Length: 468
Image 1 (cartoon, rainbow, N blue to C red):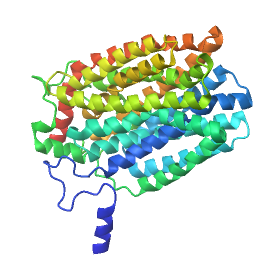
Image 2 (cartoon, rainbow, N blue to C red; image 1 turned 180 degrees about the vertical axis):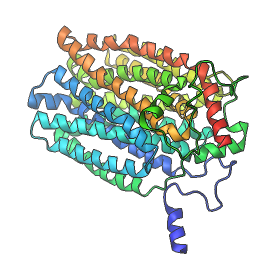
Image 3 (cartoon, rainbow, N blue to C red; image 1 turned 90 degrees about the vertical axis):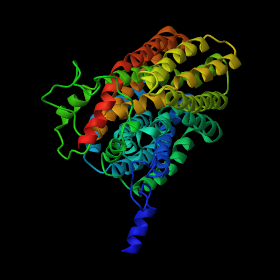
Image 4 (cartoon, rainbow, N blue to C red; image 1 turned 90 degrees about the horizontal axis):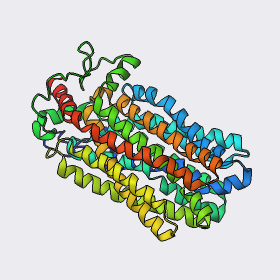
């Protein structure tokens, strides 16, 4: 018995021996966050290897830019189909086991990409990989909310969600490994960390669903955003009285579509997800083709182009996440919807800077301005994701993050394809990228519009937890 207890405490995510108290800001430790961050990194590296080796694959099989752009589109559409069922599953089954199984599927699909003998099978493996990736995202989002209180959610959500935009790591590795050893080697090597990560996730301990919301509610008002007067009153344009929001501790589960409709009634969730989707549409299209633009227009070698594009993305996303977390903390509770003010402004301004960057015919100017654009836009990563966790009840967070993931994958689906089709039609890859800049700016304005409902909906979630 003693040995069994000792083994349990050694598992990742085990609570402290004395139990969890409302005053403990980080009761489960940083282990779960580190593991889930690794999951996100492996996911994005595997998904973005293709961008770094794309010129080599096109050289071997000779397919057009439209065909190349359709690969992430088909993959993202497949991912969108499974996202909502995956969220429903995450609200009902072991989230750690779901993630571990999916990561193993990633590894196998990546291995299949490297072993593909023709374009059709390669295409299939990329679609399979993307569909599997979307199954784990709702489970990760739900788990983090049960591991960490509101005070640290912006950091953990920021850094784990940041991996969505760290495709530059895969682009960089793909370009360097592809130039040195051939494009197949990049995919074959990445299957190894995928399998190891699956084992790591399998050993995680899963917290009780809604545990952290109950702890935050017991801690009192300091754990929650300060609601405006009347924030806990039923809003005029809220969910129907006959279908109240689920309480975090509830054991009764709604059927699939009623639960989805319940989540879609949360105004903050919908607006923030739409804004981030539009950002993803633009960034997905621009950064997927950025190495190819550098090769064609600036006549760089593929290894250099992949390294520059990937390196700029990595540094910019890291810097933007740190800055966004800092600014979000300073404004949260002081300014109405302060975190969303940071995120929405970052998307709007960053998109405008990116449009300026594409006008540059100097490598140095292009790289500097792209770095600045990525940094500013990335301030939205921690702020927007933490706000989504705050406004969705624990019993529906799987579906809530699935809604976000559906919209993100739709954005990722069409960005590269729009650029590819426009490039083939106009003969200019640069011109094709400009088709996405204005929508990106509009995405920032949509996020800013969500500030009005955030405080009210976040306060309601904690009130439900307090009464459960």
